Amino acid sequence: MTYVVTEPCIRCRYTDCVEVCPVDCFHAGPRSLVIDPAVCIDCAVCVPECPVEAIYPEDELPADQEEFIEINARLAQQWPVITRHEPPPNDADEWAQIKNKREWLD
Image (cartoon, rainbow, N blue to C red; front, side, top):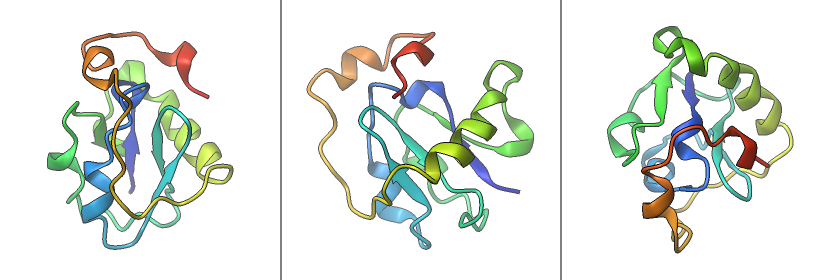
């Protein structure tokens, strides 16, 4: 099993989760993060670090977020690994309150 970054991360891109990951499974895109399922060791240390509650175990994903299993796997192959905390976008706190953000996933 793996953990999955879901829609709430889009346009927020908080990287608190990256700092605690023992295996560097996070990849960073321009507006979101994803987890590489081939690298994730199912340790769950990232979950409480996410300020927008965007990280779920694969088997507990809300039904409307299941497509993010494939999205994480695909984009992890395209985006670079991120291993250090980076500042979030200036408008991250505003985006944290917005639902239905898939159209802004790059």
